[in-house]
Image (tube, rainbow, N blue to C red; front, side, top):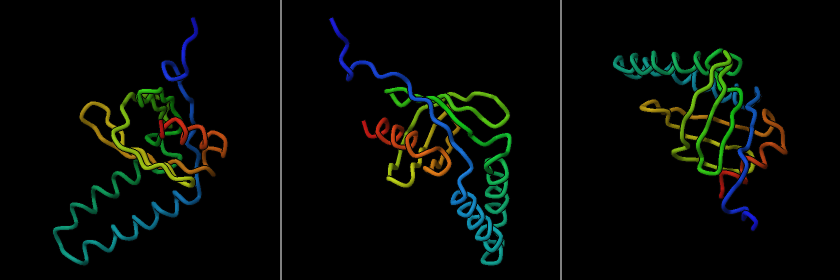
Length: 134
């Protein structure tokens, strides 16, 4: 008796590298966050949250995701820059040929993850896209 590929798919290991476009995007978000308090003083609180998240998740920082393992049920185990592992579930996803955006939930904590082919490698990015579109 054989196992169908629909019933069992091995977990996929992926890597999230330092993509230049992600750094440009995060720099633009920082610029907008710095200008937001000029529009309205109450936006200062939002500015603080954006900058906290930016410095916590900047590529290469200890809190940034550097890789992970995803299974066929879209359960994730993500490895952070400081070596700790975080488990979660893919809640929502946008899969394009040049970008993958994952919205993940770990307990009550939700976060987003940008994965680009220049940071993860073309073949790894293709396999991850294929896994997420199932």
